[in-house]
Image (cartoon, rainbow, N blue to C red; front, side, top):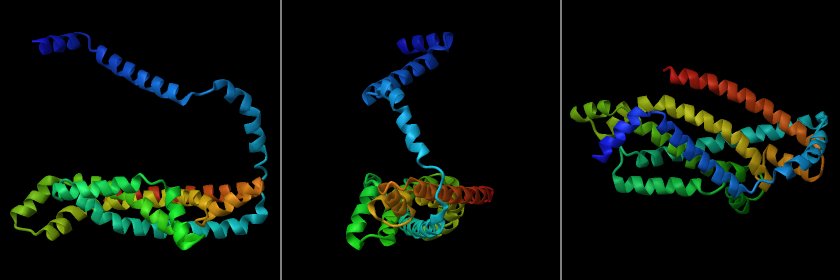
Length: 264
């Protein structure tokens, strides 16, 4: 009876529901802001220091452009191989995680593996592989490969779970095996979306590779950290500008390619 009364009350005053939701959102963000302990006065007094630091970044020192390009090529190579390794390993994990393909016990194990990989920061992965292989691009490539698994496996899993169930049922009725169902029912629907996710991850890994350079895992990030540590800020700016140009170009290219894949 009370449920019916509440329903009538909400229909009579429909604005109460969005108001209640807004109030909950405000309370959550207020709680989060309180936990941050933000000192707004510090922001005001620190502005001159921020301005001074930014001013020391310019003008860029174009004498190190050749070094920047070589480091950037290494970064792209790291991202290419890291994304490829991660994508190959992610596919079987995604299949094992999908609730419309795998048994529940296998889903639980595969999802646990995904969560375990995602819980390890890329910097920690970089440190692990630097310890294993030494400084340089191999460590960064392996770190990116493992880091990629945590995300692509989840993206692939969601793509598999979004497959039209009726097409799979039709194949089952016709007596298709699990491999045939995957080949003719799942793969054609998942492929365009999966390729789009992989391209996005490749873009992301170029940026992530620059972060891994902080721990000596090669690429443009290693050069960037070296210049900043040596207070050679104008050279660091050249590195960042070259990275910006390449990331923008790759983003535009992959966006066009993803658009074509989506229209397939």
